[in-house]
Length: 263
Image (cartoon, rainbow, N blue to C red):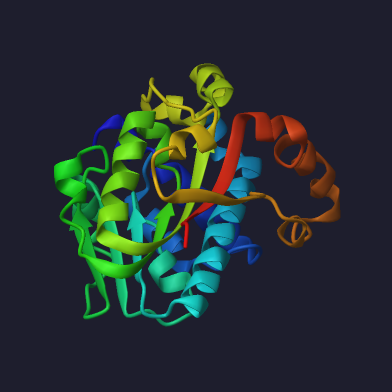
């Protein structure tokens, strides 16, 4: 795997560790894969605070995906940049079409742990290349999960991805986490992904400007650390966690946007 692809082991580790504690995220698949792959991570990547944050982020995406499926049970669920994530198993709502997409070398590992079915399949796709995202199936509605991927794409590549999705689906529901430009800049010095060799990340400073010329609008900004999940931490851990991940400074670095096509 290249350096970008190796970053998938950081959230995998966090989710596996939190799942073992039986809080925030029930993810036995992450536990199983982590035990089998045993990728060496070190430093900040092994922080329990980062593990809590990764698990909460995953849970927020899970809860949102379930809510979207209740509204649009016939939609295509597209998890672009899926890594080894088990959202397709964690989500309780039934789905008719779920596609997990990532680089071929990521999927070669993923295929050891996940089986395709009539409802679920995997597609090798580089999200930075229009000719590859155009291979996604056409449909009426798509629920698009962009977790931990936008920071590896330039703003132009994100626009191109949105343009392809608009052509293929009449109705889009998108949840995407982004670094701000400030967040991308300081990531050179403090981001755990540096420990696996990543040296270039990208930020989105103005999501409204990014969406100009599209039929996609900003619907809402969400918290990565909602109170109902923070409350699952021990009382002695909550205050410190909130300082690190749930205060205004964190938003200056990292944001979570819900987008949808305009009616």
